[in-house]
Image (cartoon, rainbow, N blue to C red):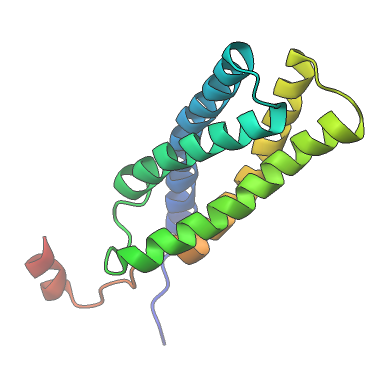
Length: 156
């Protein structure tokens, strides 16, 4: 018979992870929207291109936050694999996020400053659900629990 952590413990851990993910994501949203609006106001870059640049800047900031804050206790052995998967899933999130903005801007003609920010935020929200699932499942994998208490003592 295998030992499973009680449901309460797993829920508490998931809630802590969601809170940390949200904190890093909140900073990423501020960076994303800040860079997006700065580019919109100071350059002639088209809306979706400005959004893609802003998303790329936020992805870089988020990686640092996720690796060293949210998922600092996760497996660190395969950094090349981790970074490759992070970039792959981040690119998919970028497509989701900017696909929403693209559809609103070019499909419906909604491209005022307010409308662009609303649809950019909506795209970020949808992409965030995908990113949370993919990062925790594939990129920042949990280490298997240590069953030997003496081994745990040697590690800490």
